[in-house]
Length: 113
Length: 111
Image 1 (cartoon, each protein chain N blue to C red):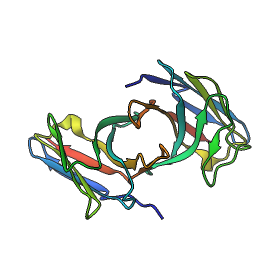
Image 2: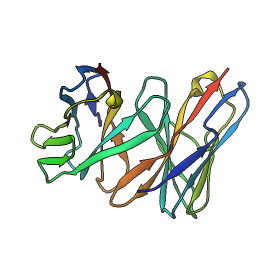
Image 3: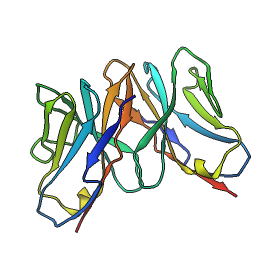
């Protein structure tokens, strides 16, 4: 397994601003993922973040809106840019550890006013 | 397209068994997973089953897999109030490491 922390745990932001979410894992991992969970919904994969290469985005998500950094094997950031109220969600990072098993961070709860 | 479906709500009395069901569509999935999300928390991996297995038991949890019908279930024996949460099934491992999550089942345990 892996222990994952996220910062901030929650935030309230004004529309038009940007927020950077940090994800830290206690061991080196190759693959990290960023998900969005809209209120009352399931999880939707935003992108896969691999160290040393650009993130791979899923359909409906673009780098300009959700830039991702992956500077090393234990850390990643997701920025939510030019926020609108529709971006209010829980944002979760996860890592692939063991045999094709993902472990999740506690999530960042974002409210955009 | 890919769709993983679950019933939205389940209510049981403390001490009874809970059965949460999931249907999936990707027959090439290698693993199927169950996650638990408590209020205000992230997702906790409960258990997973390899696609060539029919059943897996882990303490109070029993996972049943019917590949023919693409049906997965999670049985929680002796359900406790601490089991109240949202339970997500997920399919994955079909070579891409991506998961497809179900819609989630909100389990409420009545004392």
